[in-house]
Length: 186
Image (cartoon, rainbow, N blue to C red; front, side, top):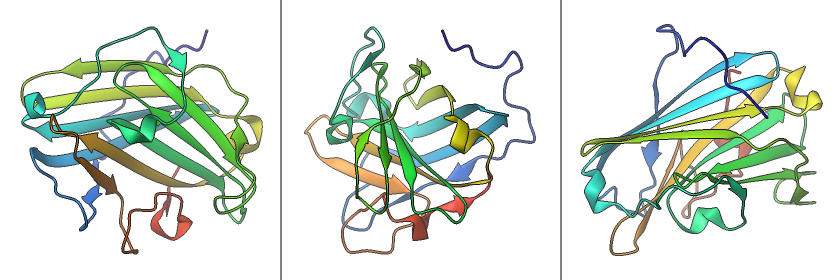
């Protein structure tokens, strides 16, 4: 089983703000931030959602299970591509502990399941803040490379409306797969 690193994220790990897409309303969410910590192939991501958490549809905790279409509800997402490569992978992390991982040969092309270990997902849910931590063991091709990354979130409110959050948005409709909106930092 995959184990998170012994040391927590250090204070030098900076929180990076995600932006709500202009076509969706942030609603009860005042901010979403993400930070990361990487040791070789082991990567820990923390997502911090601040706002009126009780107004959000947060799925109850379940046994960690691989599951498709998590993006239709509250979930955190991460995209990784070796710098200079069109190929990339996508991880989805639900507060329920359901997860998904896919590989692509190019922009939305050649999608298939990513062969990987189950991530470790931990959630702390308070009235004004939800913290989701996900630790993944990156595939070898990603573990030995400098990576371009995209961090995103889909947040569903109690009425079923979703807001879409990413580092930046440059299209009329949310599109987390556009590497133009990612950063090189991991």
